Length: 82
Image (cartoon, rainbow, N blue to C red):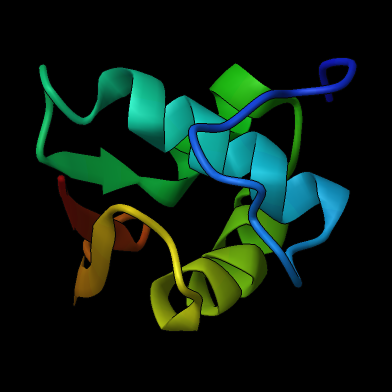
């Protein structure tokens, strides 16, 4: 996992891993809508299982993006919109 990650919000209540995932999503949401857990994991240095577990907290959190579980083919897919 990368060092300290800054997001556009203070991400109150999110863990360091969740903030790291959120920062990755915020940085890429303008170019991409669908993200697979395993591909997020590759980018942030976590396992796909860790990403999936933490995405639920992000989806339910007060964050500036919308995250919705979208599919399960070969890896959970998340629809992310700004």
